[in-house]
Image (tube, rainbow, N blue to C red; front, side, top):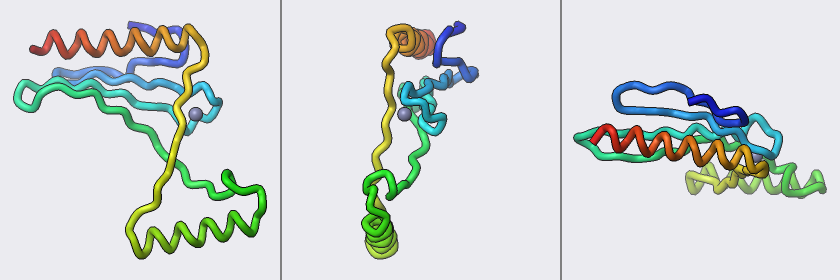
Length: 115
Ligand SMILES: [Zn+2]
């Protein structure tokens, strides 16, 4: 199926069908890849993937505070092993929302046909 706005099919094979869903915030970094997997041996799943970017400057307009936050996060990563990040994924336009729902329905039908 072709989606006219901000959702596109990435293809499918015997066990998977995938879509790219673009974020309405304007960043091209927030495109979400939505994968429906149907495997008779391992079951069914929907997986959502998108890249997270680190930006300490986003949180503080004060450059010294931004630098201090980055140092603290780097130390946390070194000594604790991870940092917590948040990303957004926004759908604002009704047509975009409808296309997202259509992709979900199409993926669900794909999984149901695989049963
Ligand atoms: Zn976004």
